[in-house]
Length: 592
Image 1 (cartoon, one colour):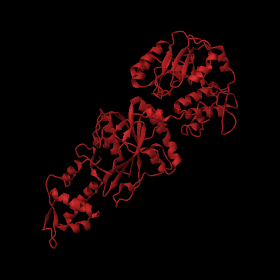
Image 2 (cartoon, rainbow, N blue to C red; image 1 turned 60 degrees about the vertical axis):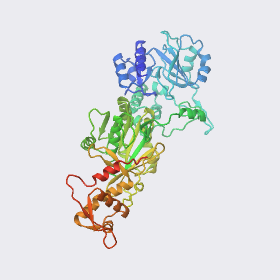
Image 3 (cartoon, rainbow, N blue to C red; image 1 turned 90 degrees about the vertical axis):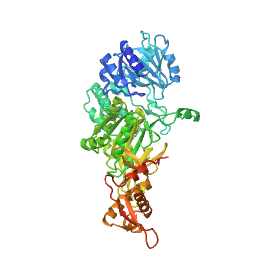
Image 4 (spheres, rainbow, N blue to C red; image 1 turned 45 degrees about the horizontal axis):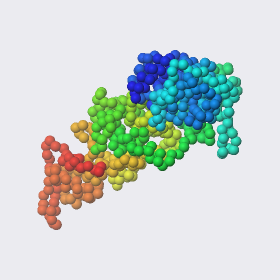
């Protein structure tokens, strides 16, 4: 399909059409600005470079004078049937099937701008517009295709349709909540320029509409400045209006209205259609833990090792190798680290063995301007499928982490974009200290509003127990959970590996304490050791027995009443205490 897209784009260029790349399975331009291609067509070299960079990109044709075409957009087969009497003879009209309806291609002979709602479910794309062209792929998965290809000669727009375009349009929609009709914003009219008295409100409404459509800031600014320049006289405050509109998340304050085709008004699916749509289940980047088109969170106390764990996961995905006993699907990964400096992050990367050949992208330091748009551009450019954001609060500049609405508003746009682009976003977030004496990692919780955890269906908690043993547990809405898994670093590779379960971690934590105690006290009974080490007696006893089995401690006495065993430290050259204990623990599979 990627080669087909490039071939189609070059074929359109050969026919004299101005071509631009669009987001895969979407309608948003991938390039920072497409306005220049209303004036000058892209070269074949530019087109080739775009589709080599974005091989899955959809294909857009700029309408109007630059391409010599204009398009009537019928949003459904019923709309196409209803407008047919107005259009008359369909000879020499190009017809393309879209995701939901049809595009009707005509020759551009009259200067007409874009217009929504010319007729019910019928829009028009002329000067200042573009359309998604075959063989692009709709968000539903349906392929745009030619029903009747353009044969080199196109018919002019029917006079009756031109009259409908130039006449005052019906701007009323039914609103049962209000009981009366409500005027609809004229986007094409605003782009063409507004008179004195309408400029301030009109440019702001235009910016708000672009924001609701999730149009990138730079594109919205360019369109609004173009509209401001067309005003009589010119309007000088377009940037301020765009900045005001882009303070809000897409869709903020928007209410759907019956009959308003610009609003989101979906038809519920039948059970049969829904089951067909969802067949196949999740596609995993990390088996049963990290799916594509979703978001996750790793929450943990400061200095628990969240960054090391997340980078290790990103590296495993970038290489397509197993991590913590689960398969990873090879995919490009990106790590955005706001919490670490270049030096700090390089130290983590060196420990994990990151190489120049890894399919891994990194940004450290300041949060980029218009961060969601920045991520979108680089995700598409590099073909990234797994993105780590470290940390959640600093990346979104959240002022009050306990304010549920602020957290939702800041997080929502990137969540929406992740699903649109087909990527997984993994947020890192700080958790509270919890109850360390109990050794229960469930006692820790992500800082701030409970809405934060509620917004991520794939939640992992990374906790410290005892004197610093790391425990991973999870709360997934699908897949397969991690149940209090003890993690440690492999001394040879630096990678995070499974060391056992929670009990193993707590037993492991007791071993060095016992050895330190026996360094100062040459011989002690088991009861004396249990009393001196701050941990449950069960864990102390198990650690003591493993140390004895590994020949790290010896004992004297017969082990009977009146003559109990007395334990002492055995100094062995060339081996660190606890080595054999770790070997035994690593043989077990505690995920199953």
